[in-house]
Length: 288
Ligand code: NAP
Image (cartoon, rainbow, N blue to C red; front, side, top):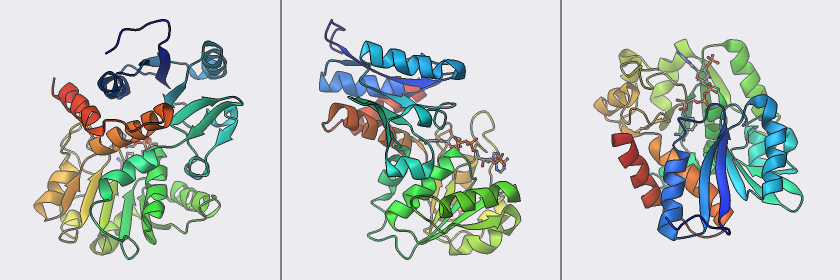
């Protein structure tokens, strides 16, 4: 990495807590590889200090930053411009400074899509099933729409939250008609799915033996369907193990994490970034 000098520009990530963020690892690996005069730092910002922190960032000339839990929605009122995509998702994870203040977008959507792009030439006739209706599920719905998928089912355990999620998409700038399905009906719709995405934290470390889909239900997955788990620790979850054993293609959350970070860095630096270096840095860090 080039030395930090008087000219070094500042990037970072805000969250609370922030200690577990993997973003500094991959962003600084890319910055070092490119030899650009930047540094990327983690900032623990308590919710009550969000506005003060944003004003301070402007004052000290921060160029841009990522946003993670719990600020992804809370930051919206403090931005002078929000992309239509981020408005539809209802959350911002990447912010950059402009002469008018802060602008924001959501690179989780492109992060989700990128690893899928090679699988099919067209997604128009494909069916997606999304497990969960939280923050990540919102980026996944927007990603499915961007891919061109016309039939999107969302599965969740709370009927009221599920209905609210469905309504929010109908009313969003993307005006998407998402179908919903209670968890108990998953086995009925699963045989239709070309893409099954787990956006719940079920199976995440340390609960590594758990899967959001029971083995008997996973039996219904179509041969060659894609099972995509947004979890990246562990890299092969029980959900992916079950799907793999039934002939599905499997994909974990690490490429999405890398691609959302790469999209953010590209936006700040306005130049191509070394995605493979970012991936390797994370892989090495997770294995150490
Ligand atoms: P979130 O907003 O808290 O949403 C979690 C969702 O999972 C909610 O819909 C929740 O439903 C559901 N859920 C939780 N436990 C469940 C259970 N036992 N059975 C059924 N549904 C359950 O979290 P998030 O931010 O969307 O993140 C979700 C996962 O995605 C995490 O594992 C996170 O690490 C991962 N993620 C990965 C990336 C990446 O780049 N790879 C990016 C973002 C997120 P209720 O509301 O009913 O509890």
